[in-house]
Image 1 (tube, rainbow, N blue to C red):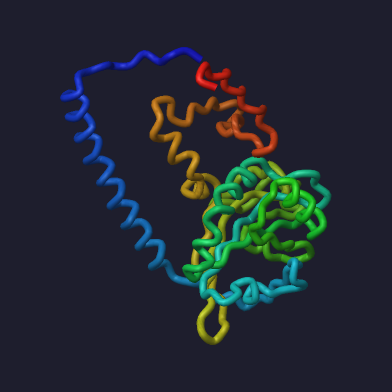
Image 2 (image 1 turned 120 degrees about the vertical axis):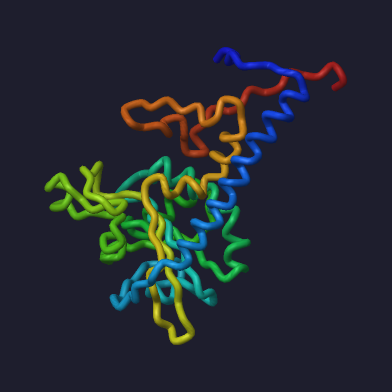
Amino acid sequence: MGTPSHTVVSRDEWIAARKRHLAHEKELTRMRDQLAAERRALPWVRVDKTYRFQTDDGERTLAELFGANSQLVVYHFMLAPGAEQGCVGCSFLADHLEGAVPHLEHHDVSVVLASRAPLADIHRYQARMGWRIRWVSAHGSDFNYDFHASFTPEQVASGQVDYNYQTIKPWGEDAHGISVFFKDDSGSVFHTYSSYGRGGDVLLGAYVVLDMTPRGRNETDTAGQTMSWVKRHDEYEAAPKPQASCCG
């Protein structure tokens, strides 16, 4: 990978260019704050259907997944029944969520991964990845289907499914997404937000770092798969060892 050709200037010229860019960064920050406020102001939908999940603590309802918190974030993780391993992109995102969970759990937000796979399949892959994040099975439940992160064989065969608020051609029976819920003092649960597709990019801290670097994300669109460079964290080749130092 060669060094990219780029303009090189004096420090004073660089500071002037950086200040011009800073104005755009601040504009984006204000727009992001406005977008977050609009998101919080969205209307809610009461969840009247009873969803049941298999968890490490036995069967639990959606309301029980909140624990002591009033807010719940569910990441729809693509792991189908019988699958040997989970989706690469979902695994990439779970790596990021893992570190944030202790902070979120102590700030009134519970976080879980939910997949169609039975709990035994989940345990096998979770152990391989070394994650401690709560991961529940929606096997036998309508949950992932009702929140448009899974599709029936009949829907897939039809060639059209409802995903990311539009009709698309499915690539399989599962998709990724994020659904957010609120539970009030009476125990009623409300669906407040869902995001799909690239909506999950905001959770990927690695992209934030890459976007600061000269090469950026440096992704090649291979048949529409811009994230083809991403691997499960245990699949990367070992980094080359540094040469021995003359100073020992």
